[in-house]
Image (tube, rainbow, N blue to C red):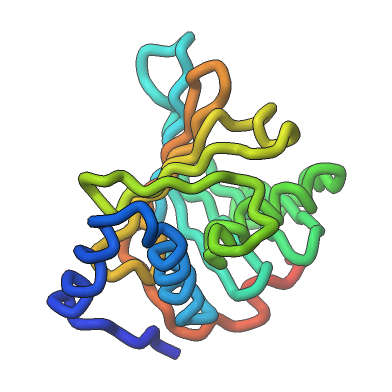
Length: 207
């Protein structure tokens, strides 16, 4: 199943007026949420870089993310070593791939539900809902750049802010930057997105 596409010129006509007034923030958030939820499936290659003050260069991982609404996610890491993380309905399965064999790792079940909840918040466009625990702002110079500031103490302990960047047609998140209170951050960049239907087996526990 493919996402419905909006011509680029129409997007410009819709987005530019919204950028001109802060009073239209709710409308813009609703627009992004609507575009993100216009397709039930999402897959993309990703580059994840972990920037730590103690290191001169970031720690980089690459792989593919698969998402099926509302809450099924598969991360298939290719580098620095091959592994798979499955998240679904608050459960987590982790596997390291060794010589073509899937070796199950400790599940970290205690944090699985929280991790799944946070990731699906962004992929499902929940920043337009009343219970979203962040205050959203839009860059006045770039209405495809959103900054989320935690509004609850639990979220504040984990992130100072979260920055989200959309492509011209915002049917997916192009980049997400998670900044920690100490200044360290994780940057995830998505490329080659696809919205074709994904098989259920892709999110099933591996043998």
